[in-house]
Amino acid sequence: MKLSANLLLRQSQSLVMTARLRQSIQLLQMTHFEVNQFIAQEVEQNPLLEFPYNDDEAGGDAEEEQYAHQPEDAGSDDGYDNRTEALSSDWYDNGGSASTSRLNDELDANYTNVFPDDGAPQRLDAPELVSQWKSMPGSGEGADYDPDDFVAGQVSLCDHLAQQIPFVLPDMADRLIAQNFVDQLDDCGYLQADIVEAGERLGTSLAQAERVLATLQSLDPPGVFARSLAECLAIQLRQKDRYDPAMQALVENLELLARRDFATLKRLCGVDEEDLLDMLGEIRQLNPKPGSGFEAGVSEAIMPDVVVRASSEGGWLVELNPDTLPRVLVNQSYFSRVTKTKDAEVQAFLSNCMQTANWLTRSLDQRANTIMRVASEIVRQQDAFLQHGIDHLRPLNLKTVAEAIKMHESTVSRVTSNKYMLTPRGLFELKYFFTVSISAIAGGDSHSAEAVRHKIRALILQESPEAVLSDDDIVDMLKKGGVDLARRTVAKYREAMNIASSVQRRREKRALAKVAGF
Image (cartoon, rainbow, N blue to C red; front, side, top):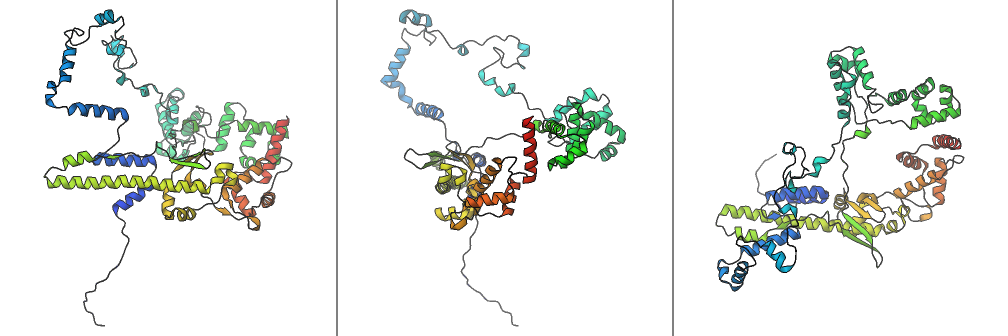
C-alpha cells in the first residue's frame, strides 16, 4: 500500500457549546434564589452592573446630584441673595437657628422639639451593663439595636442531652463514654453504634458501657438512645410503668401489629380483644422518633415564580411574580465617561465588561419570557383542573408543551425544574402538571395518573368496615368511571400512597369501630 501526503479542503458544520451558552442554559434552570446569587457575583466583578435603587434612594441621589451640579457663581443669583437675606433676618438668631421662644410668642404656636432622639444624649442608667442590655435607655442610637439578639437560639438534641448528662453521670470516664454515644445519635434519636465495638475503642468493659447506656436511656426525651423501634417503645412504656408481660409480648411482635394480625397478637399476649385494643391505644400515644423535635433543619418558604388568577372577563391571567424577578441595570453613563481614557488596557477591560453586562440582561429577559410562555401553555392545557379540581387534571408531557411554544423539550424541562406556580387551587411545582396518560374505555379521553390516584384514595376513604374494597373491586369501580386500569397498577398506586392492603384495612377498621363503640 502506497502512502502519500495530500492537502484536502473540507467544509463542515458543528454545534459549539460556548461558555456563555452554557451559562444561559444554567441560568434558565436556576431558581430565583440562585439567580440572585449569580447576579450578585456578577455585580461584584463587573463595575458597569448595579442593582436598581429604591424610590427614596433614587430621589435622594437625584437631589444630591442637582446640588452637586450647581454653578459656582450661584451666589450672584437673585434667588440666592434672597435666601441669604431671609436667613439673616431678625427671625433667626446669630447662631443660625430660629429662636424657638420668639417663634412661640409671635406665631402663637409651639415649636419645641417633639422628637426626643434629636435632643441631648440620654444618661445611662447602668453604664456597667450597657454591653449586655442594648435596649437600656441611653445605651446608644437605634442602629445599635438588633432584634436578633433577643431571639432564643434553637437547641439541638446533642445540646439538650449534654445539659442532663452531668446530673446522672458524675464520673468523668462515664461522661466520655456518654459523649461518644451522643455523637453517634441519628436525627431520630436512635443510637447507631455497636456497644462491643464502642467499648473496645474506648478501652472500657462491656458492663460499664451497658451501664452508661442504660443511664442515658432514662434521659429526656423518652425513648432516646434506643437501638430499635421495639426498644424505643419499651423505654417509654417503662417510664410510664406500663411494661407488663402482655405489653412486652406486643412490643416484641411489632411485625404482627404492622400486618394487623390481631388474632395472633391476642393469643401471644394472652389478653382478650378489649384489652388488646387498649394496648394498641397506648402504643399509638408513644413517640417512635424521640429526636424529631430537635431537628436543626431550616424550613425555607417557597416563593412562586408565576401567579395565576381568574380574569374578570373570563379565563386566567398569568403573570410573573415581581418579587422573584431579578433586577440589574447597566450604567451606560459611567461607561461613556470612563471610556474617554486613552489607556488601551482599560478600554479593553471596559469593553469586555459591557459585553458581559449586555449578555446578562438579555439572558435574564429571555429567561423571563421563556418561563412566561411555558406557564401560559400549562395554564391553557390545564384549564379544567383550575376550574374543577384534581379530577379534571389532564395528562400532559413535555413534548406537547414544547411543540405548542416552538421550543425543545430540554428547554421546557429546565424551565419546569424547581419553579412554582401559585393558582387558586394552591401552590404547585410546574412539573406537577406533567403526568402519565392512562387510557380510557371505549376510546374516550385519557385520564391523568394523578387524577386516577386521587380517585383510588377517595374510594378507599369512603369504604366501611363491613365493605372493604379489594384491588379487584377498585378496578371494577374505575372501569365503571371510564378508566381502564390493571390490577397490578392499582396495587402499585396504592402502595405508593402508603395505603395498606384490603385485609389489613379490614382488620384495622373493625378494631377502630370497636374502640369507638366502647
